[in-house]
View: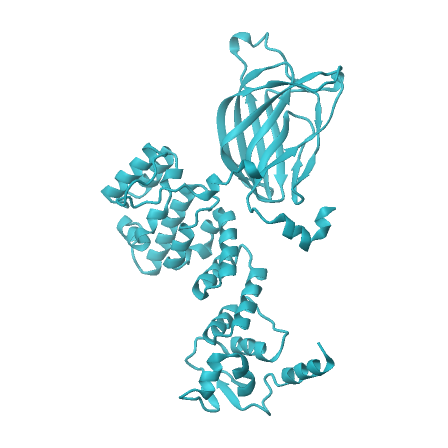
Length: 461
């Protein structure tokens, strides 16, 4: 910027809230805010119509009936006088509302950028409401992505209970909510109970709950629930569904592969995108192997093998590989448990009895020419989240009649305690010995890494 332009900007900035040179006053109950018609009308069609339209305002504009405070209006006026604007979460709603009313696109964009940079998990619902109300498409996309990824926390939050009905509709239509579908159902019931209390209605009556939720319940994906979960949801609210709806839910759960076949179906038969995000084309391998230890130091496989790890990014776990010696196939029970790093109660995310099929691999070394490896593929991907510890527990079940003769399992592999993949994903393990040699993952956020590396080139190193 030239010195002349810089001086002009400074002179205009000095006019901000300057009472001596003001030619218009915005009158509030608690304050009179001075301004300058020429400066305001230069960039705002709304202001131009207000002062130079067919019915122009005088030198005083009555703002006592406006749904905006004098403080927020002063913040709004800053955009006309200075480039150094201080927005806060306390006044952003009023400022973005004024920007929308005044058709001041540059102010609206600044407000949207402020929200994009300032939004947190606690303020996500608030930001999403503003995005929907004022058509902030960029903010809407970012909020929806974060709401989907943090669906469990959002659905349990107090701000979700205060959501207006139309915003609830928008969230339930999202196909990528990263949570169990029964949690969506329970959140809807909790929201309806809160809405009943606000309207002085009895929240214990199923008819009142349904009146609040209306047809939004058709966005609950019963096709993604187990039969037990469906039965539990229906049983928790007797009389909530009509006979036709119950019949359709039964058809969905009886044959989950059946797609919507005609217009009489009311419910959404499409599973959440979260359950479909595993894509072999974006497969990431977390390989832990460092070296093989000598025979006297090789690891003795335990009857119950436990591997614990954390991840700094949200990724999907789809499979893992186990490695050992002297065996081709072995029965086992696989459990995957999630618990917060702060010690909250653990939650079981996966439990399955299976046969681990260890296949022989030849590695070409005379001292140890072969090893056995088995891949275990989960039937549903598990979302790994930061600030959580994940435990893979493998319980081997040897045949009783051959228990004494069953060979002891060993593993001579020594593994890394931390692995970096895809530049920014860090997996940390609590032990370097065990049988889990690798994890197969997929990005959940699908961010453009090339753009990320251009913005932050230090990620290359």
